[in-house]
Image (cartoon, rainbow, N blue to C red; front, top):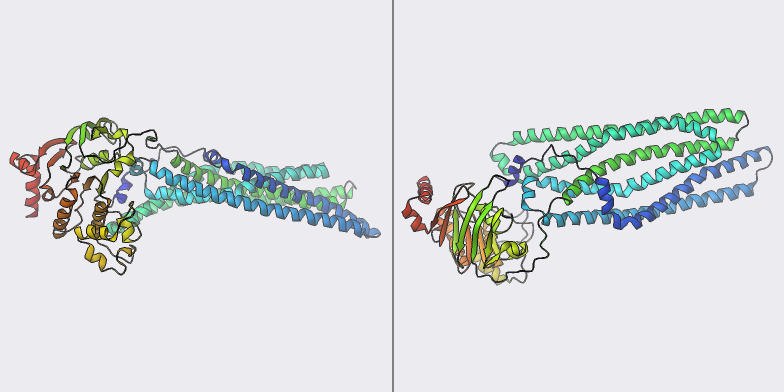
Length: 597
């Protein structure tokens, strides 16, 4: 069954605390962009100030016109004030455009840097991390969460700062204009601040839950599509649908609650704004009747009240976006701050042309503490030997190879190559020493040439022909419309066996000094298996190789056959020697052929 499908058996821990400190971590990440953000904020503040001063000039213009109605309108004064207003609003527009351009640049650069950081992090995380986290959840952090962070940087930060400046500026100008009407407006809008605080405190947990549930459902869908054939074969559509509906219901509840609470902010702010508007009009009318203020002050205050209440709505929207961004940033930086593999930049030892002598000395390992899989493994492999590893499922065969490749670190003991402890050289150096063919085939969307030459440069068509001929693929490739330049996409139908043959040809082209074959012939028919076996014999000649096999007929010519059970070597020797012993290997071998009969 598809391994991605099996990952649902290792769900994310629901008892883990929600990621916190997302915005503070994001602020530290964006520190290099602070100068550009500061300039953008200055532009936003400048544009806002010009907008705030506008109503005061409008009040002056209204008073000039009102005074002129009784006699003659001072057109020079009207022209001067109108020109000043036009210049102020024009400068406000230009500053807004400039800050928009700056923040767009910051947003795209920060988003790109975040994705690059995630991409680099992927290569530094231990294999164990991916066994506990679904691929879809990681993909959701790279796409949905990063995009949401970018949208917040783009608009919400500037909107929030501009709204605060507008709010404070309006407050100052209103007090300068008339303190009585200002207190009336504040009393009417104070309710808005209290409601915003209440709604914000209640809705944050739902924004966090929404981002987490979005990652969960993306992971489930990714698994389902990658294992769609398995779903159909096992008639598991109903089970998938039930799981999907459960996850979708959780996402719906979290999204509905977060959006409902955040959606309350705009209606509440509109109500409070209208209430303040009415209050100012009534108080202003009373003061005008008493002769305390002029009609121009009332006009100015009507504009100021709109400017004063509008930031409340903008602040509400910005806080909603910041809540979503905080949840998204928490997930992204939780991934970026996950424990990495040991830093090996200080290691200087290298192995370039090993003879192939491998020594396992008292190796101990377990995936979880207190539950060892390999308890005390010892083996001395001579250069050029072919070592076959057999045993029942769960005996530790693949685990042993993973330790040899340093995909996992030992709990005890050591593995040495040519007398050099593998822990003393870098993982990259270890990986360069091995060609590897796994049971799970992996091909990417690209040409056949790119798939075969993966990680290698300067490979000629002659080398490709020899490798493909050895595995019986040359005729198939030559029959394709573009040969090695045929793109492997949905239009090219490859069987599992053909995919496996391509990965074996890739290992031949790699031409590494040592080989690991993990069930390399599991997906091919018997006739093709014989052909591949001949190619493998040629490929492994003179090279130390480790072969994991369930088909015991494929390892008869191995120099050493290790029989593992519960992480221990219970038998070792050649094929003939083990059969003569009549032990566990003989039982496995005879059972396999009796089943085949």
